[in-house]
Length: 321
Picture 1 (cartoon, helix red, strand yellow):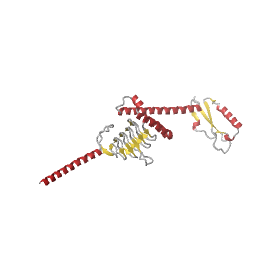
Picture 2: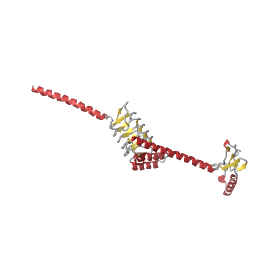
Picture 3: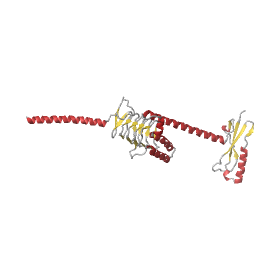
Picture 4: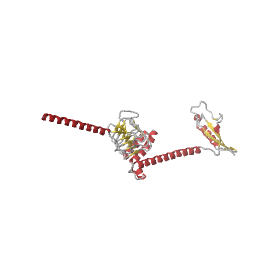
């Protein structure tokens, strides 16, 4: 046998203007009516009282006289109560919370795996989880970034400052960081508010992704995927470092760096290395254009000195004759 639920709504536009005795009588009548659940074989009755209209023009208590919608008669096997709706909503929230916990755990596991893969000194996952300040800074950043996205900017910034005190790494909660970021050692690393970091990048100690102090809006660098920034490098301003590029230790980058390029020096100069695959973590075997220019100058000075010596010798022989 099929069960049907009849949905009845009470609208009382003039409820605000009734006296207390009248309101009590109405409430008692509605409660008595709501106590009726069965009005026939297979038919169950569900009622609810609607809130009064904001400013009704007439005072009237009426049953719903417009045609019932298709949802008014719903084939069901159970009586639906407000408690059912409450528990259903609670179950949905709990499911979303659990999904968020699983997603966070997966991100932490991926971060630990990246560190173990890229750092030869990492001996175990437990060591990485407990002792690596770069990982701790990322965990604090993710919590602060979530608060920042929800509009709790002060709390998010306070959390980032606590992270700076604990780890020596300052990441603004407004920064956008992709997956698999590895901050090695990390002391002195600064990442500005509008900085954007792609997936699987590597930053060493002392790196600054900052602004020039004059711009507003987007004022910090954007790093593509698989970018390596060496120890002490400073990237200042709003520009893009292309995917696969490398910034040498101590470089000061003030402009665009193409993809799969290497930038060195102060200010940084780009040295293309097309067709050569370079180890992502190799910071020593990088050509230095400044050093190469000095070598060329040295060779030229030696040639000029040789010519001067030859001329002096020829002059001395001429005077002797």
